[in-house]
Image (spheres, rainbow, N blue to C red):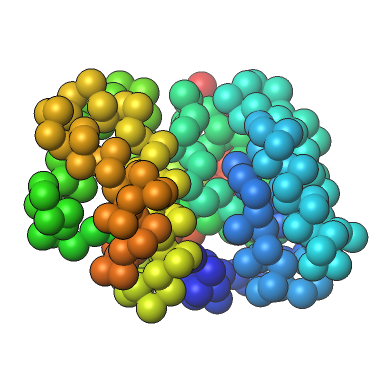
Length: 265
C-alpha cells in the first residue's frame, strides 16, 4: 500500500554515496527491505527482526523476486545489550520499529556503534495508526474510527510511549547529528479499494481487543459489523475507503569524539 511513499523516501535520503551494505532494523515481512533493494541495485541488505515467522516470509518473497542472494536475515531482540554481528553498514534503516522498543535510547547508541564513519541512519515513523473511513462513516455511528483510536490512547501511552515521538532530540542524545528531516503526507484514495480494504480490516481488527473495553456497546457493535467479512456494510465491501496518515523521516549521522577527548572526564 505504501510502496510509492517508501520509494520517495529512499530516493530523498541524503547519502554521500551508494550504500553497499544496508541494515533494516525491525524489517517485518520486508516492505522496507525490498524498497531498499529496488533503490540500490548493488546493495545487500541484512534484515533484522524478532519474529522468525516474519523473516521466513521475507525469505520466501526474496526467492520469488530472485533477490535472495542479496538478503541476509537475522533474528534478534533489539532490546538487549548484545546485538549480533551486523557488520559495518553504510545505511541503517528503521521504519515503524524504533517506537516498539522498551529502551530506544540504548538501541540508538548501538546503531551509532555499528554504523560506518560516513554512514546514514534513517528513522521512519508513522504519526499514528492510519485512518481509513470518511468522517461520516459508518452511517449508523458517524465518527466511529476516531472514537476507536481514542479508546486505545491510554493503552498506547503506557505500552508504546514512543509512538509519535520526536526522534530528533533522542538521536542527538545518542550521539547523532540530524542532517535533515522530512514529513510525507500519505493520502491514498480508494481507487485501489480491495487492497485498502484488506489494510483497513487488518489494522482495525488488531486494535479491536484494546478498544473494546472502552467503547460503548453501540460503537462496539458498529465496529464488529465493519469487521464482519460477510456483512454488506463490512470494510471489505466499502468503496469509500482511503489511507490517510503522515510519515516522518529523520536522517542522521554519527558524531565523532576527537581522539584526545576520548576517556576524559
